[in-house]
Length: 351
Image (cartoon, rainbow, N blue to C red; front, side, top):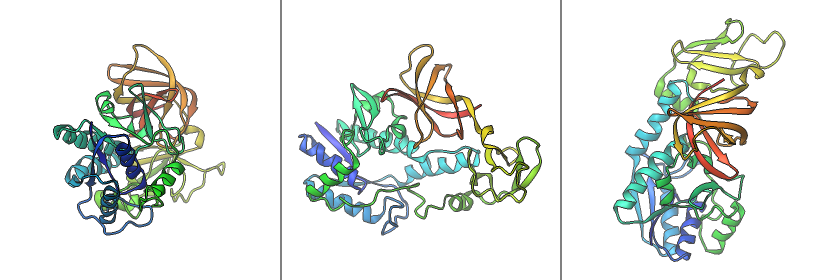
């Protein structure tokens, strides 16, 4: 069986490739060049796809004794991930670029090219499992990435391999050291990979520009202050509001909504963030007819909560058993039964 191992230059993808080799697969490594102007070095744990990362991936492939190639996907990544990220913020939504990258790049563009070249599957270092053909959580819940993989179709899952799903991060690092892989202690990438300095507001301001508008009280409609761009805010945000007028009761305010039409950011008390019904568009997955009892996760690092879920007429509706706060349009809602992923949708509204 011929498999293509996506090698980012990190420890996870290197060990995933190593396990595929050890399992007897015919493995070829590929590094995705996603940046049009790749930096020479990473800045600690920030950023990815640097020249250093490509060298680390090549060295790992050499240790494993597998062929290695670099695929230039910078234009596709810029269009499908970065441009989408900016457009979503400009529209008042809060996107998850890792989800979009998995959907559009790693398991669409890469998988499609791999199959066209005669490979049977793609191997990645994601922490997730495939159980009886279904996507499932990793045993390491602290590193579980099933949420950002829930955009995959069943056809894509059938041609994917996640060798690390039965291991913890500590076990993976120890194994990398035993195998003589130089990336064994390389820091994990954090934050948004294409914003190396971690300053998301600066990144967006350079692309959208400063667009001043009002910050208003959700109860009274009173203007409390000004902002330089609604893209700098997300639902549930508390810090950085820079309000000069404190609430009458002295309690902190949170972002309740963002309205691009009039460029308004609405704020209010924490309890005003509570929602019981969440709707999502573009449902992906296999859902039974009628309502189902399950768990839903609505943030990459959020907890899964009980809900009654139904998909009808292209809309996923989740009735939460207990109200939740800070649910932002643009994020994914992922439906689980136990550890098994049933599917996902993109949140369009919460009330």
